[in-house]
Length: 194
Image (cartoon, rainbow, N blue to C red; front, side, top):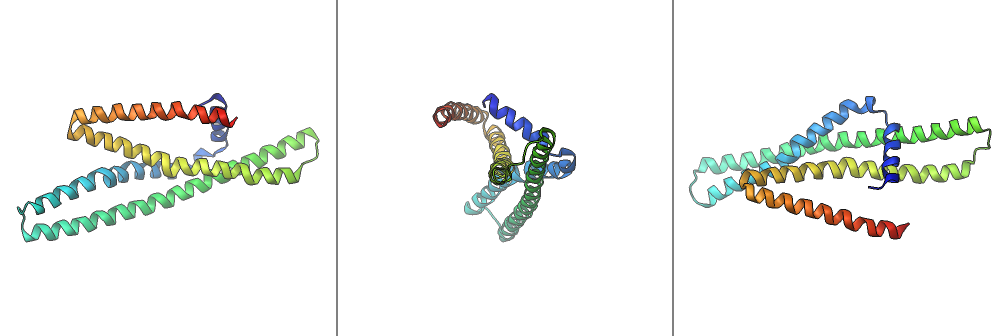
């Protein structure tokens, strides 16, 4: 990440009223930290273990019914957690987006009040359509994509270590290598775009 990008992100983070979204942000983070590892690792592992046991014909009729009931219970659990996670995530995105837009407008108004210049309303309106949209996309990607994906990768790496420590080490080496390749390749297109 370049210095300019960090400065922009720092400025945007100052515009968000963190006190107002602290509780929903904590709830959202907890939902992501609890639900995603269960959804991505535990439930599939558990269901495959039950299915393998049934396919090996070492089961009773009650176990099949219990497995099917637990399967549908797991799906219901995942759907309920996903629903609440998406609802809270949408509210967080909207609140952060409006905080940033309000602060940008307030900063612009304060600047033009103190400088005694005429307010270029046409240009201002064009920028206010573009800048908040870009910010909305950054916030959307951060809340709905980056955080959940990061938690999923950590859960899968933890599962690999649980299954076999060597597999976990291989996974970490692969993950570090992929991050290095991605970060190395981002610089070229970024410099070309300038």
